[in-house]
Length: 204
View 1 (spheres, helix red, strand yellow):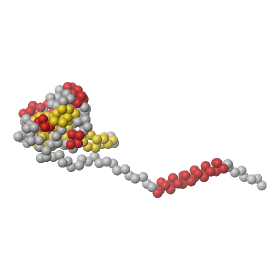
View 2 (spheres, helix red, strand yellow; view 1 turned 60 degrees about the horizontal axis):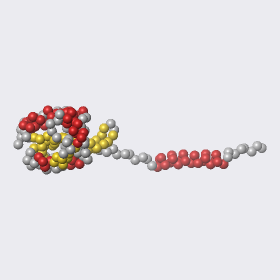
View 3 (cartoon, helix red, strand yellow; view 1 turned 120 degrees about the vertical axis):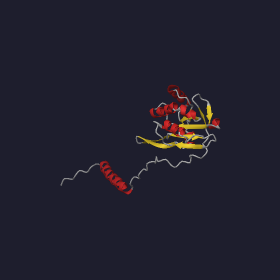
View 4 (cartoon, helix red, strand yellow; view 1 turned 135 degrees about the vertical axis):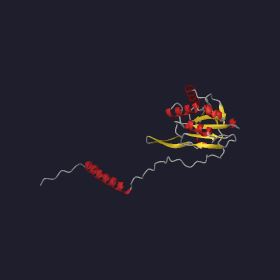
């Protein structure tokens, strides 16, 4: 009777180990299911920065690198608009809209200030290129954006990031907010604000 040849011990051990590993992975897969990942919410929460409350103070660099504070405008009305990024298409349309409406803003005694997380040097180029007749303030650390509650988590092409929610604030001579426009569209917004002021809704 011929004796059957046995496989080398090392091959037998590898085969046994492979089978055991496969069974172990299968068993572990049944026992522990991957947890569902909760997507962050982009829904804005109710804000406390509303008409009737004192506007948060700030000191930021304008396009010349000089500091500008809200306190500098005490006794005067200020229209503070927050935009996302200088020289981008939507923000250019919005900024130029405020430029074109300046005669109506001046007629109601309103001083316009633009704010974004850009550097003051980028603002200098943007202002010169678009001939903007009002100061642009650099909020590079987004601290003023946070103070006015316009710095929120956003979603773009499946990616979450922190950015500016386009918003405008009308601040009275006493430093109290008169009106707030949040999550506005870049096209036509300045004209809407100017019309609101001209109709007497914002006259003082």
